[in-house]
Image (tube, rainbow, N blue to C red):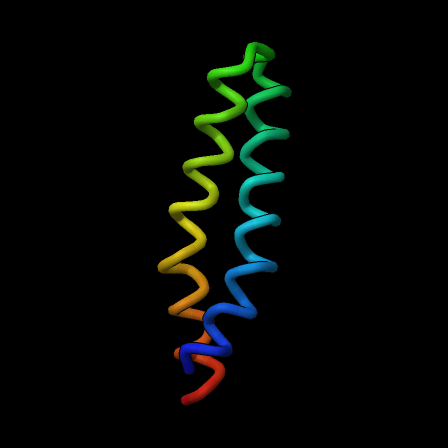
Length: 59
């Protein structure tokens, strides 16, 4: 399951980071720090999300 989690993490993290960056830009925060924080939040939230998706696939 670890290999599947890592493969899913690469897809889920880029999707979440991109979605959060777009949300930050749409709301008007167009400086560097809000964009970086949105990417960090997407990266961190992708870890448990990819584990949960891998767990659901293997069950």
